[in-house]
Length: 298
Image (cartoon, rainbow, N blue to C red; front, side, top):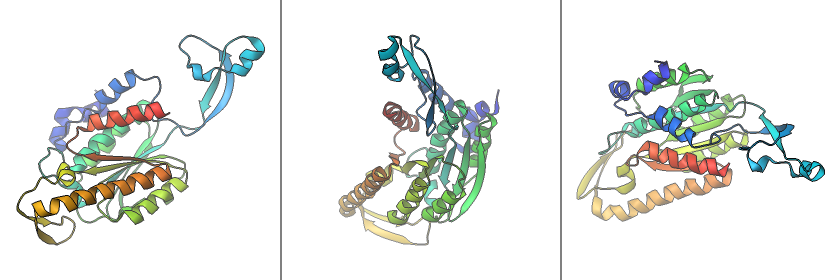
């Protein structure tokens, strides 16, 4: 059994992080129904023509050649470079929280990252891992070897999110570290002021990177299922607040909607894929819906 398969076995994952990680089966089942991966290289260049054979994509037919020769030829393209991916994980204390779900936000992020990492390695593209809180804590260089996924999962399984975070500063720092255009997949609950974070995301885009932002909230953070007087404690700072949950619910839910909408609008303007998620939705279902949407788009 290869290393990546060993780490993706549910019984092993439950031992190290209590996760049911089905990435291998999700990705291989997903790819079986596709002609092309939804994660692809940035640019392609024209190579040459070849004769059309049944099964070729009709979009690649060269009608100019047909007009001259009355024969069907398709344009051959080749990728200029492999797609290099980075999984960028928030290690702040709030990521370790859940109210009543089996997975914390961090566990949920690991599941998503494992499936995406497996997908990239499956298509022989290098993928690396970066973790951060108030600073970048670990950085595994991109590799396309099959052992890379096991290495990344092993590192993540040994981490416990704690302390505060500075998403904006760390993303700026990371943008300056990248040497070539890459696919940057960010996993965070984004529980900080949106303005500086958006500026850092713009920085990543300005340098030519493609960015996918996985905004992961706990189910309770989205639905606010609380009643009566509730004491809330800040997991990243020594502060407590007692509120009347019923009286607060409407204002809270409106604030969450506006919070997500800010990211949705600004990310759309910057050409960033923004995925608001919550931990009540199975990660494989949420990821499959996104990948299918992306595959249709490209």
